[in-house]
Length: 318
Image (cartoon, rainbow, N blue to C red; front, side, top):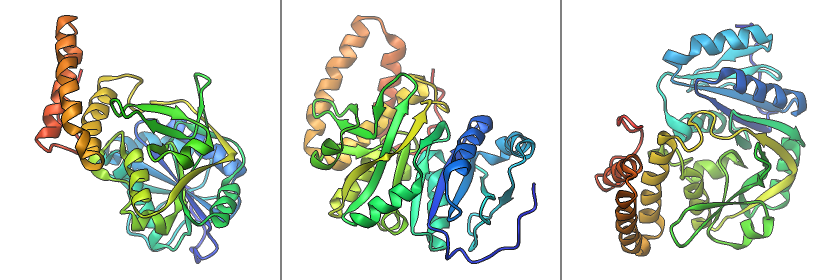
């Protein structure tokens, strides 16, 4: 570890950027490098290492070889690293997307950092910086959550998503007017900016989801508090997508299905019986087509939701 400078007050820190790593330190390092190249001295980058008891030796080697100064911070620390020094928090267990990032949220809140930016580790900051997000947030205090332009590897651009009333699946959207005007829209957790105090008031990202649907839930909670959501397109990031879970992997499918049920129950309970009837028809269709793997995965997801088994699953998926 590169020795850090002596600690100083964090009162000059305006933004903390949270980057959660889980078994992909090289990609996380690329993300951090893109931030350090564009962010002002008033920003602190926090590397959150999930499952650190397993992953940290490899991640530490990657960080050391990069030459970027870093400092290990305790999760309960009342100080931050110096400008240009990456703060690292070791989450010994895999806390999931929400739980891992919430450790960082609480660190920044404890240290009085006004703004927090959550970024996926498979992203690169391409244009703009948190300065533009701060300006937008200060100009419009009624907006609780901000997104940015996210440019996906397949060419799509989006800032968040829109829930389909038919089955509560998600359509990606970019248009600011939809984000602000449609109550079923939400800011993507891939790039999510807020006042740290707002996140604290909302209870941070809901950890019982573990993976997927925590960002729609977070936006729903913001709206329940009378806050709007919007996007600042002066800032653009590139997103590789599904680096940790794999695109359309059993892991991704299971959490998406299970958590969708939990989301509907929590925010649209009147739709629950209709969605359950639709699912029975889907189960019949999957069995008729002989898609037993998909049937088993969706059945497990539904049964776990019914039994209240949220958080990290111990099931063997695949």
